[in-house]
Image (cartoon, rainbow, N blue to C red; front, side, top):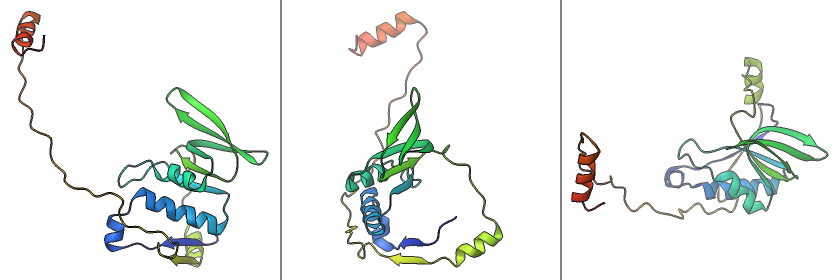
Length: 175
């Protein structure tokens, strides 16, 4: 919502099935360089594989500062003051532009599109590109060799008191 144009990178078939966060990061970095952007906003983590990698790798590829898990962003003399949630509370950091920001769910109140705005959005140009157009090789960097269930554990037993527990542990050679 609110954009003048868009870029859609089309990936299908086997390339789509083996697409990894590193490939997405390379494509985003290439588009950022071509478009000469100042800020890249990304979500916190992917919904398909639950990875939290794309934002950090994109920042590394561009050699830009990053602010992850942003819950509040304020402009401050050409820089950005980003508030983020950490284990102990809130942390505020200063980030210079250009930068990569990954958002926390508290960053924004969602806006719901109205019918007139949906109709306007349909008229906006969307450039279609492929990974090859961006010079990005999307061949897999890792391969899943096998997936196996863990071995079935033996059933436990109930003990009546501490003495019985200690004797069972001694019999098993643990104590």
